[in-house]
Image (cartoon, rainbow, N blue to C red; front, side, top):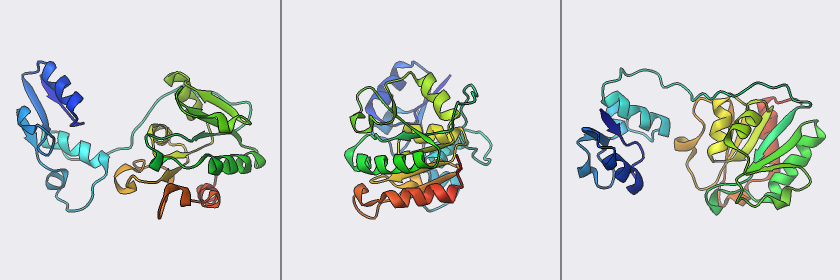
Length: 224
C-alpha cells in the first residue's frame, strides 16, 4: 500500500505518517521531505519542460513518476442530477479565501443586475460564514449542502465568481464561466481545459470593472 501526499502541508504530512502505509511518497520540495520514503522530483523535470506548470500538470506528474503511463491530462468531471429549471439562471460566487482574491460586492451587484435584464436569474452562493447581505435583492444560498450546490451549478446557464472552489466545480460540469483573478496566478490556478474566460487584475482586484466581466460573458456567447 502506498500513501501519496499531494498537498505538502503539515496536516497532510501527519495524516501520511498516521496512515501506516508501508510506502509513502511526496514531492522533494515539500517541507520535511525527509519523512517520505519516495521523494518525487519537480514536475518540470518529470514533464520535460521549463515553464510554470498548471496545478493539474503538477499533480499528474506525481503519478506519472510513480509509473502511470504519461498521457494527456483530462479535465475534471463531476456528476449531479440534471433538472430543467423553471427559468434560466446564473450562479455567482462572490467569496474567496482571502481579501486580495475577493472582487468587491458592488461589481457583482452590477453584473447580476445586467444578467437579470437579459433574462438570467442571478443566484448567489456562499458558505454559512460568508458575508452575503449585500446581495439580498437576489436569491441567495448560504451554507447549503454540497450536494445542493453541485446540482445548482450543474443546471445553471453561466457561472461568475472569484478564483475559488465553486469555479472549479463549474468547470468540471463544462459550464461556461468567468473567473476573476486577483492575487493568484491563472497559469497555475485557472480552470483546466474549461470553457472559461479569465480576468486578471492589473493591480488590486478591485481595479477590474463590471464591464470587463460582462464583456467576458458576451465572449462566451451565453444566452438566457
